[in-house]
Length: 300
Image 1 (cartoon, one colour):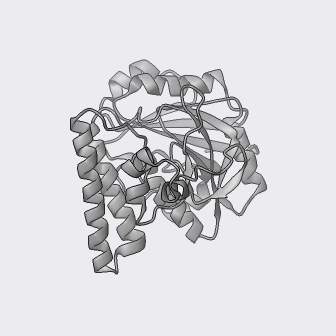
Image 2: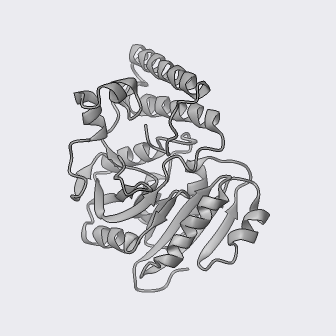
């Protein structure tokens, strides 16, 4: 049980069949040790805990928890923070690495802004490029204007894509947003518990969008805080089973739309399903041709 008077953080990392990236993630905590009380819980969805223990079991502040099966991102994160007593929860992808001050900056912002329910850092690619880690909530037009749609690819400055991806905002400035990527997201433990954690109907993808949607409904804000940063290898945690990832990505999209938008409007629900299935067919065709992009959780 945490007893220190300093702010404390429980870091939750869900691992699935990519120990090399996980090692780099954990190494970043040794290279840039946070100046606060923290512990790391790795929820292993791979059912290969003994092998993982051999590689990372002796790292300081790391606790390994084996899931009984591949529970998915939402359920495994919920299990990882179950029983946590820390003040803050930091959800981090295993394909991400922290930098100096990543956790401290986010904690300080939440300490100073009680009305903020969640805060996310800037996500930097391997070459330092800024990723689209904060966006608008998806609308029905998002099927056409998502990050990798044909509309966005061939007409990158169209209004629908710009609106969803928030391409015109200054990503060097702290600002309120609709949602931040679950690749790196911090919130108060008590808020997470009040919300009931991640919705486990989202196996993979869109769980961060749903969580932030519910944070807004709680009357709190979601903030993008670029003074804090991580390095993120997009798709690094979802490449082991690309067809399963493709299926779950679109299933989660439909789950989100139906949960928050169209459940009581049968015609709109049918149109949404048709649009998402059409998009999935395009992605499947690209995948079979070797041209579909890899993406990270929440990157629609």
